[in-house]
Amino acid sequence: MDNFVKQSLAGLRVLLVLTLITGVAYPAAVWAVSRIPGLHANAEAVDTTLVAVTREGDRYFVPRPSAATLPASGASNKGERNEDYTRKIAELRTTIAQREGVAEESVPQDAVTASASGLDPDISPEYAALQVPRVARATGLPVEKVRELVSAGTGGTFATTVNVTALNRAIDAAR
Image (cartoon, rainbow, N blue to C red; front, side, top):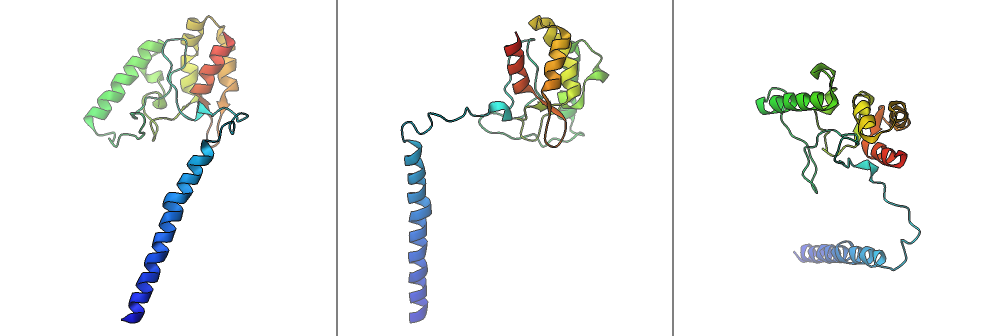
């Protein structure tokens, strides 16, 4: 019994010490360092192209629909057999087809479905190409110039995609 009490007290001391270090001292040190004036004076700007930034108006490219409600992210768990989901997809397809002046069959799948996080800034080159005439018309830029910007913004790590946030910045810079 005496050995059990010694080991329990030793374990409790270790628990308390580690709790103080990892739960109090370390977070306090990180917070204190972040408050040092001038520490970030020469830091690079934060890359906001990792999240879809929706801009209003026909002069901008439109990202995928979002199921997220900021600051949280997440997608719907509704499947293709869910009536609400299929109705929403059909409505989106019709809306996009009307906005872009194309047949509903021409609307790519990523134009009507959200990404897993609901914040993905990437669209397919097909969806970007569908939007080129509208963006060119609204911005006054030649269609070929807008196509060049889309082509320059096409890339990606795992698949060929177009980053809408970066593309819209390029559109602003080109005007």
